[in-house]
Length: 278
Ligand code: SF4
Image (cartoon, rainbow, N blue to C red; front, side, top):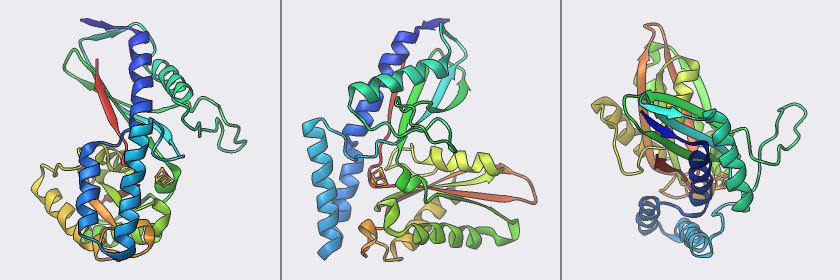
């Protein structure tokens, strides 16, 4: 067994929060640069400004966007790890530390009806999966409300099939328009039940921006959806152009014979996620 101490988790999470909100991954920046070359006029100018913003944030050590999001974590906990703490609490303490020390905006209200800011950006949203290892892998994904609010879930019927999925995904992107701050990464969860497909769609967003689905049908759908979305002319920040999405990521899970749940989670151009393994 490997023992992992609360303090190590707090410090690792705190660092993740600051880094994810400040330094956009080079792979995402490269994608934006390629998209810029493919555009002209206003669309090109907007992507150039996004790139300049992201590079300035990194060089000045400041957040790339004022909305530093609700703190979402995907955690892989090895069966040979002993924790001397409550994992959710340790993550919350790390979030509070990171958002305070990094001067990141704290955007969480403790109760959705009374809406008082918790002033610590906690509680975090934590998804835990068990693995057969002696590692604790923590992936952090700050999720801004602009794109999260435009995400949707729909329970399709199997008869609606692939065409029904495509129509729904395209509708979500068009409904969102500029409010989700495109160019997007579009996470699509298909299968499971209502809550699992929503989780699949969110989890799709933490895949490497350049990877492709391992399932051949999902991979084909990713390419077809990207083409469809980019012919919608929503464009960068909703002002028209060829780059509405940089990528589409499709994650699948088994489902009931009479169900076809589909969720679409939109990620804005601030495609932030970082991971650490303890
Ligand atoms: S949607 Fe993204 S880029 Fe737009 S304000 Fe929110 S976090 Fe920032």
